[in-house]
Length: 429
Image (tube, rainbow, N blue to C red; front, side, top):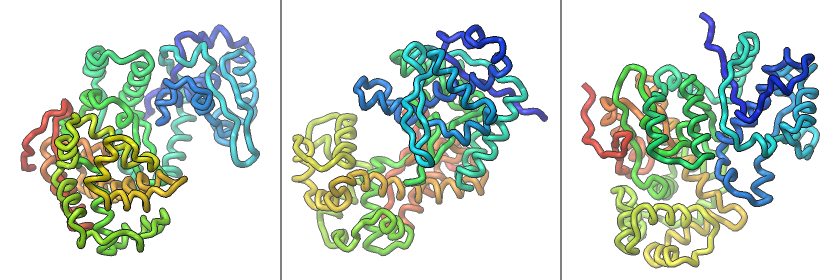
């Protein structure tokens, strides 16, 4: 059985066929591939926020490295260099030409005339489409760990996008033009079976196009067997995972000790949580899912504002000059001391990496592994999963039991519809 023809994307402001001279028209798919790749990276890359910033530094980040070895495999070594040179000569691409032999490839981006344009989809020819299929198959086998590969395969097997629902949601959300382009591109990709699977080598976190979209657009994801989907996740997950980490270090849990060692955390300087009243209060709040609500009462701020400020307090460099940060210091001075150890000067991202590694340990390496064995359809979304509703209660129980196994702490696990309404879980029959 032949696979479906692959699709490339090109700016609507670009008429590639008319630009190509007759001698190059036979290489239309090769030219189209380069343009499509740079267009997709621009809108689907995780550095999306840089698109809306106009600083010189942000503009530099919008260049994309094109690995010459990989490009020669896809385009054929006889053509790759000429194609890039021609696209630059025709003012379709621009290059920064900053490269280091063996370390850094040349970087390119679409010129301003095409970079922010709407897109149209164009089918590749069968021969080039098959070539890309072979390359992707080899790349997935090489670059995705075995567990993440199984996650990717079951997502493609079990889920798709309802474009009618997606289009209605897009109209209702009234997204700005660039965000709307990004959403349309990601949804179209997933509808065609390309979920953009990737994994962070530093944290083990799994990513796909759905994760990077607005939460409301998740309503467009559907299970192919018709099952109603729900979102099962951990309340105030990052503060809770800090509680898990401190408890695991005191209990000398091997998996977590290994993570701390890899990130060069000085665990000998960490306080003993069982002997501190403040830590008991902290773990009680994070475990019950009321940590943000507690700060709402103390500060008079809304939950959304508290959550945003808490993310800044946890993960940005240590300054603590805002009223919210001062309030945090008064309520949890010992946690601030932990922050100082886990966010040293020049490496303030260490805490984020640490908590995301623990998140992956609970969600990806334990929960997702089990669901693959049990053949439960799911999509992991950082601290939770999308699953058919009939499995929700069992999945929530596994999350709580896994956390308890490592730390003797159980989180508050929420089960919500894709519209955000909390539901009472039903037991699987």
